[in-house]
Length: 481
Image (tube, rainbow, N blue to C red):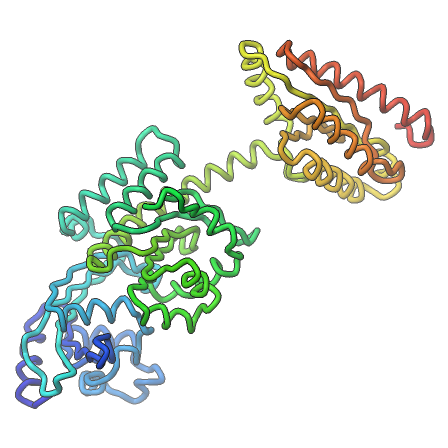
């Protein structure tokens, strides 16, 4: 850059009322983005950067007066993490003449909402591989609704439509399916999905999915993902509010950071991708995942999905909270099967349905034999271990049926399996629970073919269970309670 060009650009940026810089953007021989540097900065950016970065290893001993000279000419990565998304918008502004104004939630990364303004600069550089753009920004601790309202009408309309859908009377999962399908169409993608993560259990769940190919089983694709792949995303988004892959160059960049993940992308012929985290109270709770989108509208798509993810994060967090409440109110915390409260509610509902629409069903009562002896000899901790083990065996045998802990040592199973299959399960349970010194069930079961009387069937099953229990104590009288 000649001195005349420098002075001209310096005078220009110093007239801007917000932190601003002229970025020098390199175009590589293959047409991709190369190095991005601060060519010229204004006094607002100088003060902003000096207050944040003075004293770091790059700036030791640099005083304020000479800080702009120190920063100008340096790669933007001297202080900030390398960000392919940022480099892309700089390249588009500098080399493609695009005017870009985005407002996104970067609070997870920087603690602020950020408005980024990029304009092409027509001033020519003496190096034909370098072109310029203006980059200015504003920061807000909280979302500025005025700036949000300033986004383009089509983006605002799409985001508002999604918010209204999420606030209607549809079930949450149904609304998420609709919104995800709308995102698919808006981004002209091959597939779009949302998922939640559970760090405690190292698992993830697909909560919505849409594809332009009706034969594409998105949930099936994700079912082959080990949790470690989803886990690696959190490290990748720590210093960015989204991951955008638009070409082979970006795939190579992320392949160096997450080879196992990018391997799955290549296997599934993913050429472009958007990954945006859902965050709540500073924690990542899920992601919006879009593949093979229309890269020709990258800036508009990036701004849209980052804005909509801000609102989706709130809805997903609320869904997880309600899901957790439902779990706590319906599941026995010791064994993980449904509790008595859940059984009472389900029995009331099911009894009414069967009364008006009878269908074959099965009921079984399974009561632990000798639990008191286990408690007396090994303490209640040993008794709890037995209850947990007993529940695990029941879950293994009756994997597709409803299992309830009806009382301290009593479990109830309600099943709509065939009579033959259910009897096979009972036989298997007797084999697995036949140790009189540890796991031994007294079992009573009843199959109702057509009466539809659930409570009567439960009474019959209960009576048979007590007969079976009496036989056990006749054989092992020392274990009688």
